[in-house]
Image (cartoon, rainbow, N blue to C red; front, side, top):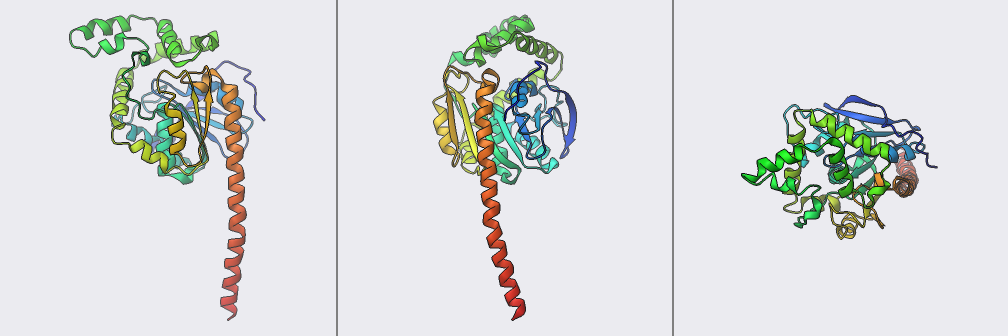
Length: 325
């Protein structure tokens, strides 16, 4: 059973410390059982999961995290913007809660989720990846929401380009993000666009925002060298689902099949007409697919318990025989 989104407001948030890591989280109430943890992408935040978490709430309580330096979360005490540091923070946060979770990640958050699932399989009951940021180095200008962002890195021209980008209103910047992230920008409700603009405005006032986005982006691209993420994907053992929109301009849809093939037993859902943030663009479709994955994970758990039962009984019988002898 899936829920219905009855409010456009983001879920309530608070700062939560777990495993020595303090992250701002937005929590969705739900039943007892395996909870869900949602991880956003570059420049995103916990609000990227408002609708999907609401739809899945009847099945699992949810925690959408703001990664260090993003959303409402402060940077780490010693700022480190590498994917390794973000993955370490997420892993420590999850390990501190000492519960298996359904891990759901989008874009960069998907790449981090792969690392966590590979390194600590006992913490991950299932893995859902929505357009994960796997290595994609193609030089395509369509991947940049504003061409002036590229010019901003060029000596002399950079100053003027940065000034032009800074002069954009939060509403204009929000529209740019929607245009590049959604396959059909017309699917975005007005209240969501207003939320994006308000969040951009608030983040622009934080001293670490530019550093967090720029340095995390550079570190992520550098981390693609050597194929470490593909090797991590091969070590994932949790039941997995890869979701990809065929209009994704940020991470090429041609990588969808390779990503699903890299993870043992993973399923692939390719969505026509959808962009980079399927959980926001078509949350109902994604929720249905995630629900099926969770059902599969539960069946796998039950089969594992049934298999352990006879083995445990045989072992106990053998021990009793030894004691009798």
